[in-house]
Amino acid sequence: MQIAQYKLQNNVLLAPMAGVTDRPFRQLCHRLGAGLVVSEMLSSNPEVWKSQKSQQRMNHDGETGIRSVQIAGSEPHLMAQAAQFNVQNGAQIIDINMGCPAKKVNKKLAGSALLQYPELVEDIIAAVVSAVSVPVTLKIRTGWNTENRNAVEIAKIAERNGIQSLAVHGRTKACMYKGEAEYDTIKAVKQEISIPVVANGDITTPEKAKFVLDYTGADGVMIGRGAQGNPWIFEAINHYLATGKQLPAPALSEVRDVLIEHIQNVHQFYGELMGARIARKHVGWYLAEHDSKSFRRAFNAIDDANHQIEALQAFFEELAIAQLEAKSASVAATAA
Ligand SMILES: Cc1cc2nc3c(=O)[nH]c(=O)nc-3n(C[C@H](O)[C@H](O)[C@H](O)COP(=O)(O)O)c2cc1C
Image (tube, rainbow, N blue to C red; front, side):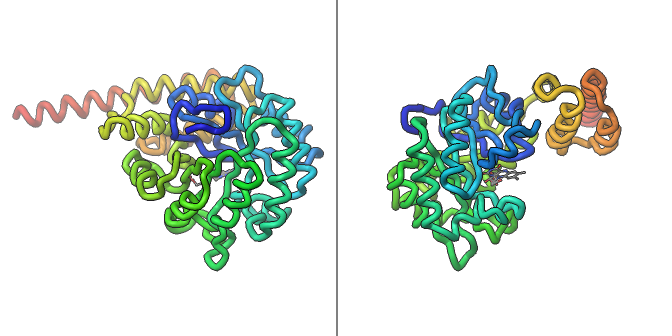
């Protein structure tokens, strides 16, 4: 997939997720095969740029891969200013958020609330596109609610105002995250515009990614929650799309090494205190599928990097021993 001058390394993208796709996680997903990673959203309100959270979100020092930065807001001139500011700060793509359903965002008429106002959508896109020389992409939902599913109208506005790629989450704002994503609207969008279309929503397996690509004709897929604690999903999908075959799940030792490297990077980037909090979230996601409730409870009480790493090492050692014991018990049972 090509976004203006940028040829992506593949068509499986990481979705922006505030509170999840922090810089260390994005870098990890990029290293493990995501075709493009998009930053968590940044408000267009310059008053909040000085906050520690915004400063960290704006820090691109040493970031590898194409730096796509998402902005959210509702006033065209502020959105244009935010786009310029982020480009000066290192953004190589500006992504506009018209998909977020959060009350806090929607009550300021930003995120998916904008879908109710196509004229304002056009003004924002035109202002941002003319303010920067880098490609501008857009992320939307299928509409505000079922009665107003206007993704095709918004897509046409986006294309004629210079948007270079459009990601569509197959739910309306009213759906929030309930029910299942639908892909008919994404298919209709793809048929009506010629810029790249990226399908998003409930893609959590390689088979689902293939189904959605085939069904919608989209140019790429975007993975959100399916990547939480599972940065291997990009490689798994890419491999399946290329060969029709499944990759084996990562070995326990690989999960351990990647998770520990990730947690070290989180501490390095965010510092001890905030790092410990962010690390807890990610560890919870990585270990959700293991029998780890009591470990996670204990882990959540640890607040320094070294002890967090030591605890993870001990957890994986125990898990490896338990797996070996289970294997030899099953071999013994078969032999008996
Ligand atoms: C915790 C969380 C935070 C999110 N933050 C953003 C955001 O900052 N910007 C955005 O455009 N979408 C955001 N989204 C929406 C996702 O990008 C994506 O569209 C949605 O999760 C559906 O994809 P999925 O089913 O693969 O998760 C967020 C979703 C979640 C679950």
